[in-house]
Amino acid sequence: MKKLFNFITIIALVGLTLSSCSRIDFGDINRDETVPVNADIDALMRGAMSNFATNGGRVYYSNASLYAQYQSQTTYTQEQRYVQYQGSWYSYYIRQLNGLKVIANTTEDVRGATDNMRAIAELMSVFIYKRITDTFGDVPYYDALQTVDDLTPSYTPQRDIYKDLISRAKAARDLLNPDAFTPDAATDIYYGGDIYKWGKFANSLIMALSIQLSNTDLAGEAEAAFNEALNNSYGVIEENADNMVFVPDVAGGLDNPISRSRAADFNVTKELTDALKGNPGPWGAGMEDPKNVTSNHTYDQRVEAYTSSGGDGLPFGYTSYTYTADSMNDTYDSPSSPFTLFSAAYTWLNRAEGALIYNSGEDKEEMLTEGIKRSYEAAGLDTAAGEAYAAARVADANDPAVAPGEWAQVIGEEKWFALFPDGYAAWAEQRRTGWPALQPAPHAVNGGVIPHRMLYPDNSKNVNPEGWAQGVQGLSPAEDLNTSKIWWEQ
Image (cartoon, rainbow, N blue to C red; front, side):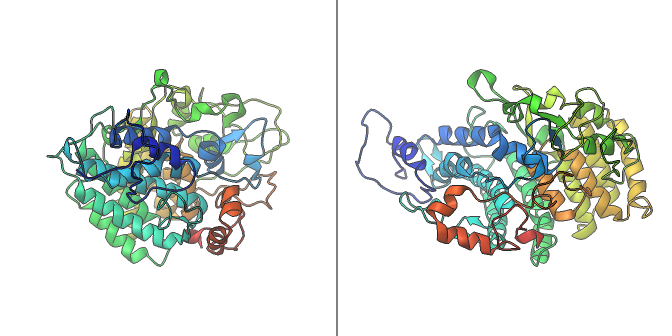
């Protein structure tokens, strides 16, 4: 059996730096003879998954939700007015990727070969790295998580990161083995060790990675990866039963991530509720009369599921307010509310876009319709109502007078509706496609630009100035600001 780190040593060291990518033998230094020599890979997996799912607050949830204009701030409005705000990647690297790397390097334990554990750890790492690079741009990647004393890893260009993430996701998928040892539900808190579901997730993730490259010089490679994943024998996520969902354990201290933000400080945006209702409507005294940020002109029942009472949200991006509005429905933001990390609706809508731009051979009308139906179902609504709404949206996509961007516009808008309340995925999609046609905050403090990224963490510049400078050079313009574009936007 492969020799591993002393588990206590790992926990003590991971907080110091982005470390422990490769297996390192520390010998008998500081060994506590009362604890096991081998790392508990089950605990590492459970810890990484739970930490990723429960990351809340500004830098790990709220800001992305604000930039995607899912929520408005009611009192403390700095972030929705785009103050230059440093992000954080501490939890991603230290509390998640470190442990996942240990698992990925563990070829066997007392139960035998650990191929499925390794594959799941790699798929989770790919998923996490996508969020990191989509948030910041070029980030520590190849040189990150290497040794415990390296505080100055180089930053890898986002283009190279994306290419490698697709390769890693394919390799991890192909390592999965339904007939081998699998983790139980106490370890794999997302899929309970169901390897077939992990295979579907892997293919769906590859498709999402590939779609994100549609406007880059890698579009040809991305198209091939998209279609290979679409036709892989594991299939893709098609039903909500296969969604990647985090179910909180409130008694165990694992709450829904949205619930960690003070509910009184946020409302659903009027941009979202108006778009779902298909009617921009007047905003009231002192507020600019908006245009609907989507092409939708059909009432969408999801407004009733997403909001507290099916009413109007709060106009986005002002310094202060004098009236109240609908908040998020508590089925999404209470401590015990399940949180969807990856969905069937998103995958169907990616397939709709793949039919449009990647020559997948599928029917974009069918894909769009199925995506909307799965979104309705996930929201607890009647899929027949979703199908009727989808028919209206198909008509919109075929009418340039209604949707000047035609199919690309309607698919992008429907992704925005279906991804709620996952601000990170929605923000990444909106930056790539330009849909929906969100308008900058009226009281923006950054010159009136919807943020393209979060600023690198403060300590990245202070501790690793050379690496930080490498990352900044990958931005356009080359400044560590939220108005600079990352590679796949340029």
